[in-house]
Length: 66
Image (cartoon, rainbow, N blue to C red; front, side, top):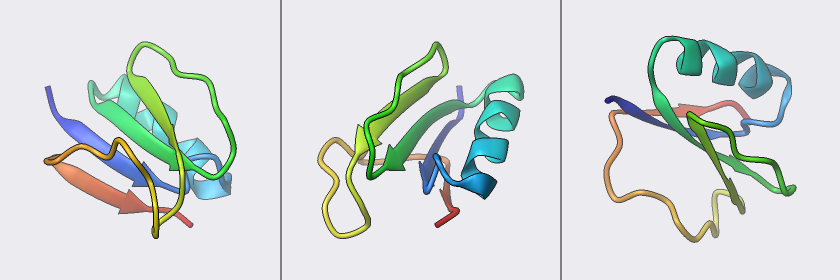
């Protein structure tokens, strides 16, 4: 399964991108400054570009939507 890392997942562009990635079979790790709820294909991390614990060591794609 392909894995994507999405910065700005809770913003206007990121919020539109996340369900499309999930529908296409991607496992998504999204980063937001605010607490968010995980779903089946989406795991949220709380942080920003400067500091975000839990970022995967390797992903297939990175999206910056901030």
